[in-house]
Amino acid sequence: MKTKELKWIYLVVLALIWGSSFILIKRGLIGLNPLQVGSLRIIFAALFLIAIGFRNLPKIPLHQWKYLALTALFGTFIPAFLFAIAQTQIDSSVSSILNSLTPLNALIIGALFFGLQFKRTQIIGVLVGLIGTTLLILNGAIHHPEQNYYYAILVLIATLCYATNVNLIKKYLSDLSPLSISTGNFTVMLIPALLILFSTGFFDTMHQIEVKNAIFYVMILGIVGTGIANIIFFKLIQMSSPVFATSVTYLIPIVAFFWGMLDQEMLTLVQLVGALIILFGVYLTSKK
Image (cartoon, rainbow, N blue to C red; front, side, top):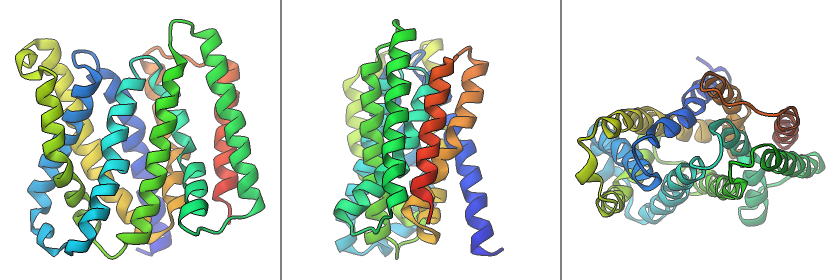
């Protein structure tokens, strides 16, 4: 299959996986606290990836481990906890929409720190995306007073982390296989995640029925939504560009919104308009 066709298939598969991740986080938070959700997500993904990719670890040049540590930090470790904490206060569908700002941030960070070239339409796209974000957050805060929309800032920080991650991978790790990058990333994160999990008192409550159900959802999130998805995503970055790869966030809100509706989450009309404005901004930044 040609690269041009294959990258679109990867994009759609990623959207289905990551679009379902937000509802899995929400389910995981019924029984677990945000630190437990974040650390278990990393641990399950790490065990899965090390099991299938440990033979790739010796192939990683020593000088590239520092970049693997950085991409692990920005690409998974920090966002895993930020999203879990944010979704204690805001809906999963809102979280997924804000995640759509990743390509805009990838453009900004790429231009500022990685020498990425940009066009005027892309700058307009960034401004449009910011307008949509402001509309989404402010209207949500007005119509959902029971939710603390300050927590949306955590999602915005996570998108900056993702944007930094894709630029780092494209510049410094393009010569490594996606499985090597993924396995290296999670090997770095396994011990810190275990220490955080241990500090939460998780092992004292893990036998409760509610906790067991939550662990099941986080296991799916870790293995499929993080482990397998990361391999596909790194492959997509290598065969395309950071902006194209992160444009998967066009489709993620559609999948996440579907799950949110099934779970009785509803956006106001103004929030839907804000979401469409964000996606239009992302579209402008992705134009060549």
